[in-house]
Structure formats: structure tokens, C-alpha cells
Image 1 (cartoon, rainbow, N blue to C red):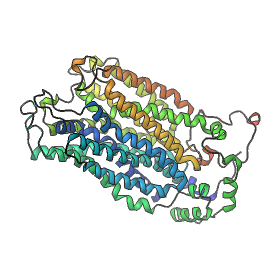
Image 2 (tube, helix red, strand yellow):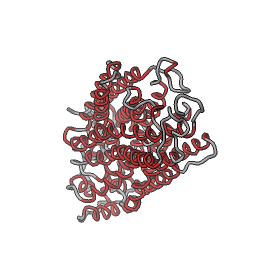
Image 3 (cartoon, one colour):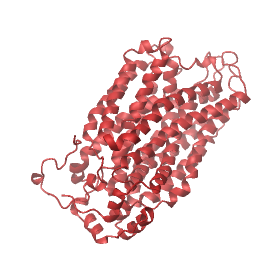
Image 4 (tube, rainbow, N blue to C red):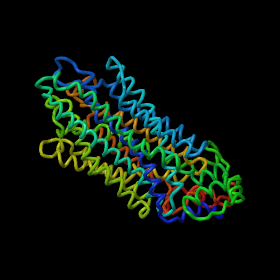
Length: 540
């Protein structure tokens, strides 16, 4: 049976949308803008890095990153992100959301700048320093996932919580779009000021010395919006749910939220002691009680995020390879280095503008109307359909005249990823776990997703290689080809659809109702547990 809610938490649950909600969205969202910008902008410059640092005299094709270097440059930030999600997720439950929030942002800003200042006398040393700074950049980014989601969920009202968390996450789409636009602007400016022949005409002159500044500027730019919001992030009060339910300080929680909501609130210290002192709310992460109450929930959030990110990140990081394979980007030898950056950035920006960004904002608009479960299930199902639509007639799509149809289908997979599991897998873990474990469980779920991103980015790099050894990229072994890789990604999406049934629907419910922290002492013996007491499947 549900007990009476704390006044300060109830005030947050029923609050009308106010200015502080939008302030919180912008402050948290700028962190996510930087997250997405930094994680995805590397895919815009890897071809350029190959031309600058791995040029081979006499080669008919421009230089490219060796397979191990390419995998490291593309994937090292994900390794850092995975580590950061686990560490900062745990730390956010131990030290408080606010105290840890500033650490992650400052780490992101410093390492964004440092990535662009990577140094060395040899290509190997430049790549090594770049990977070093991008690992720690990823570590800071990882902390932003559980903290941003948890802070926004604990500030928002029941009716608009999904939209507000989704709006924070939607800044990822703006970050991806901004990365492409910055790359277009910088490469176009350098291309106009430093004209160069194509690689086929003059292999050495096709990469002007000034091109080395281009990738550095693109990588460093992501630090600017994050740095601008650092002050405001430090001014945010600790969330009332952490202060009351974890730190057990009702007076401070009431004082902080009185300022935020501009109403007088009682401190309810006795009620805080009553809620936090219940034996039913004292279990830890590795307890049988947690396994019984939230084990299937955690399995659902981790598996769906893992499967989603295999498909999502492999597509994002290697769009340029797919565009080249279908002929949408010309052969590398027919362009100079800066022209290639411009073409890759333009293609990825078009996909972001037409497919990625709209999907995020459809989620913002509809998540509190149709619910998380429905959006996630539809998203996984439609991604499966469109992946198969790309894979089955792949030879048709790669013939001249059909490339636009391929791009449209490809854009729809991104639309339903973002109006689907890419948004909901971020939102739900911040809503269904107890306050004292919320950041930790979100971090575990997010880390599972980044493990999927590592599988997708590293695996797709090798798997998508042509089956004909003569047609593989330099230094790579034959793979299964883009077509068969798309079949594999479709299978991942289908599995994600089925695992979605482990995730509960949280639309319109308070956080304490979902985690059952405000329940009166319930049955203790398994034989006394009524049917549906540990329900995990959403009610429909």
C-alpha cells in the first residue's frame, strides 16, 4: 500500500511548468550537447587524419588510418565513457548529484581542448596523445549521463517528467548537428583560403599543411558551450530527493525547493525518518531484495540499451563509409583533403537534420502522451523494418539513380532510433529505481549501452569490409560486407523489441511510486506476496 508522500516531493510532482524547469533543461542539456559533439565529431575527421599522418608515397589512394589506430581513435572515448558512467553514477549516489556534476563538466571542457592540442613528433605519438585525452574526455562524458538524467527526473513533475528528460537528451541531436555544421564551416573556410588540387592530380599538394588546424579546431569547439554553463551548473541546488531520501535532511530539502518553487514548504523530518528507516527501503544493490524488486527492470534497461547502441553507434560512426559505398561521396582520389571533410560533414549533417533531430523532438512532444514503452517498442520494430528494407534489396540501392532512396530509408532508421529506444533507454532508468541507487543503476544501464557502442564501432569497422580481399580498405581483412552487417543490426533491433517487455511503464507516476519507496511495510514472506506485486511488464 502506498503511504503519504513528503510535502516537498509532492510539491515537485504536481508543480506547473516554471522557469526553473527550462533553466535545468538548458544547464543539463548543454552538457549533453558537448557529449554528443565530442563523441561524434571524431568520425568527421578520421579520413583527414589518415591523409595527414599516414600518407604513402606512390599510393593510388590517399592515406588512411591503420585498422588498429582507427579502432582506437574511434573507440577509446567509449571506453572512457563506460568507465565514467559506472564511477560517477556510483559517486552521484554517495556524494550527491550536484557535487559530482561540476567535476564531469570541467573534465569534459579541459579534455575537449586538450584533444585538439594533441602533440608529438611522429604520427604514432600524435595518435597516442589524442587517444589519451579522448579517453579522459569520455570519462567526463560518462558521468554526465547518469547525473543529467537523475537531476532532471528528480526536478520534474509527474506529468512532464518524460518530456523534460527527453529535452535534455534531445540536445544530443543538436550536438551531432552542430558538429557537422562546424566541420562544414571550418573546412569550407580553409578550402577557400588554401585551394589545393585533387589527390589524383597531386597526392602531396592535395593535403595542405593548414589542414592540420582543421581537425584540431573541430575537436576543440565542443568545449565552448559547456564552459559557458559551468557557473550555472554550480548554482543549482541539490535535488530534494537526494537531500531528503538519501542525505535525510528534510530541512535543507524544504529550504532549497522553497526557493526554487517560490512556495513555503514544511520540512517533515519525522516523515523522512519514517520513509528512510523502513526495512523495505534498506536493501542494497547486490541484495536479494533488489533482485526480486528491480532485477528484471535492470536486466531490461541494460539489454535494451546495449542492443540499441550496437546499431545506433555503428551507423553514426561509419556513415561516411556507407555513403562512400553507395556512391554518395565521390572516390577519395577525386577530392583534396579539405573537400573530403566538407563532403562527409555535409552528408552527416543532412542525415542529422532530416532524421536524427526530428526524432528526438517527436519523443519530447509525445512521450508523456503515449508512454515510454510504446515509443520504445515501436522504435525498435520500425528500426528492424527499415534495416531489412536497406539490406534485402541492397544491390538495388547501390545502383546509380537509387542513392536518394537509400538515404531516405537510412534517415528513417535514425528517426525511429531517436523517436524510440535511443531516447527511452536514457529516460526510464532515471525513473524506476530508488533514490539511493538511482544514479548507480542509470550508470550501469548507460555503461551497458556504451559496451554496445564499443561492439558496434569496433565490430562494424571490420565486419563491413568487402568480402572480396581486393576491395577491402588498406590494412583490413575481408569482412561480411555492408549488406550482411545491416542484417546483423536488424537482428539486434529485433532482440531489443522483445527485451522491451521487461521494462515497466512510468508515465504519469511519481518516482517514489515507481521505486515503491513511499509504500507502507508490505508483505515479507514470498508466500504472502500478492499477484502482480513484483510486476515488471507494463500495464496496457
